[in-house]
Image 1 (cartoon, rainbow, N blue to C red):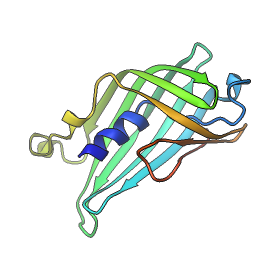
Image 2 (tube, helix red, strand yellow):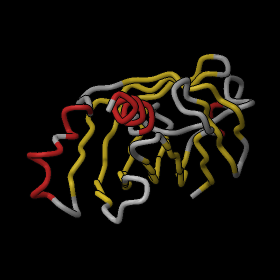
Image 3 (cartoon, rainbow, N blue to C red):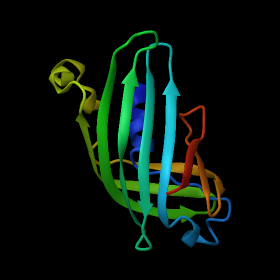
Image 4 (cartoon, rainbow, N blue to C red):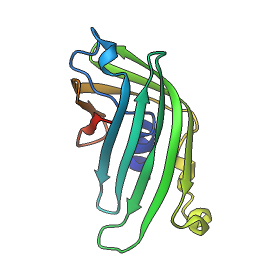
Length: 154
């Protein structure tokens, strides 16, 4: 569950990547289609979102988080949405979520038992390393994820 919390904090706060970002924050602005995943022995999380970075240094995110157990047919899908602020400092993207909403859309009746919402903060933030940012691609590295977050211009 610790990894679920970390993934949600970092991923639901927004996505972005930059190699030239500090000198050109306009590269980050616009819509991005993003994906990230985390595989552990007991579960797998996959997040796909559409991120929009505004020139006012605000962002809006919406997407789907799928939690599954390896080798099991059960998958739980959550609709996620949120908004907050962003800023660039050197090769880092700093995100501060003002609101995060997560709703179980496949099995809402399971929510009392799973109680995954307890791991998702309503106000979160995070710092992501910018691996790449150009007109079409954005890649971020989160400390607690083994693979980069991958985004393409929407």
